Amino acid sequence: MPPSSIQLPFDSSPIRRLGGVGIFLTGVSLPVLCLAQTIRTHEGPLPRPSISAEPGTVIPLGRPVTLQCRGPVGVYAFRLEREDRSEYKDNYNVFRLGPFESEARFRIDSVSEANAGLYRCIYYKTPRWSEHSDYLDLVVKETSGDTDSPVTEPGSSAGTVTGTEGSGFDAS
Image 1 (cartoon, rainbow, N blue to C red):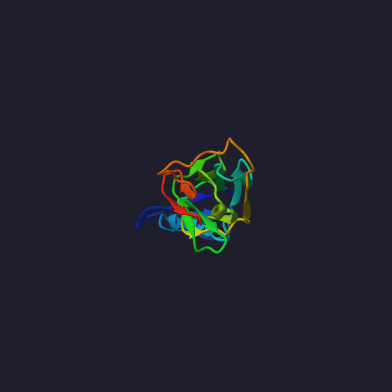
Image 2 (image 1 turned 45 degrees about the vertical axis):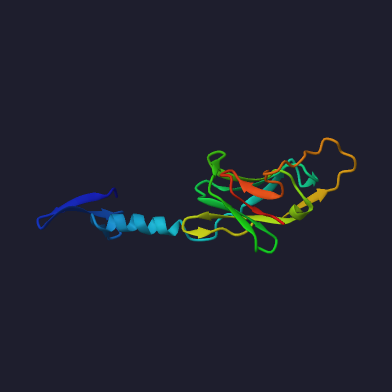
């Protein structure tokens, strides 16, 4: 049975009877149902983010690396954490990669031994933080006689993890 509208003399808003089961909706109850549906979509855990490194996870001493955190669309900020969670870097410059994925990048201009170790990502999507990604093990290898290693200039961000907005933390 299709929904039918009934107009009552004391109320100008229509009341609907759905499917003959005796459910009545007024102009006030419809927005409440929509709100309840919206709240229900926020239940359950957020998808876990992923973490990767460009050009890879084994980096020669003094070379750059970019750690990438990825998660769903709608992420407000990504956080890159060191293994013990005592050091972290937030990045609010989140890029949309497609209809379902977003990303933030954390660059180390010149890796040092202090940058080696375990990293993981987490993201904030209203109203809460996601679970952590798996760990990424960044390995810094010594170079033997490599003349192509970049020279660290005074004032550069060697050993510093930076987000695309340009602020960083010392990863040592």
